[in-house]
Length: 69
Image 1: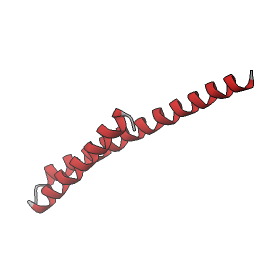
Image 2 (image 1 turned 90 degrees about the horizontal axis):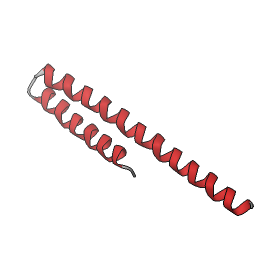
Image 3 (image 1 turned 180 degrees about the vertical axis):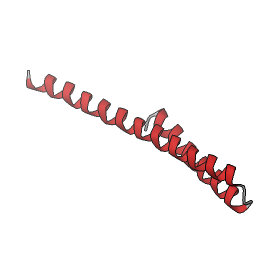
Image 4 (image 1 turned 30 degrees about the horizontal axis):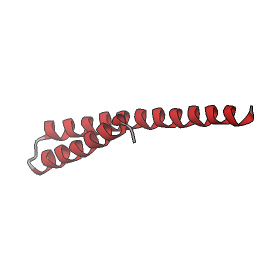
């Protein structure tokens, strides 16, 4: 797990808390900010997932080259 995945998932969780707090206090602004924070976190964690997959693919490709020579 890379830092983008961790930060993204933390942001998603914080957004869920913020949204729930907004819903509980009938504060639509906080609820909307929580939803936005969740989306931001999801995008960041997805970017981290993609980077992680790319790193794995690159290392597999590199190790494949070494073994075929």
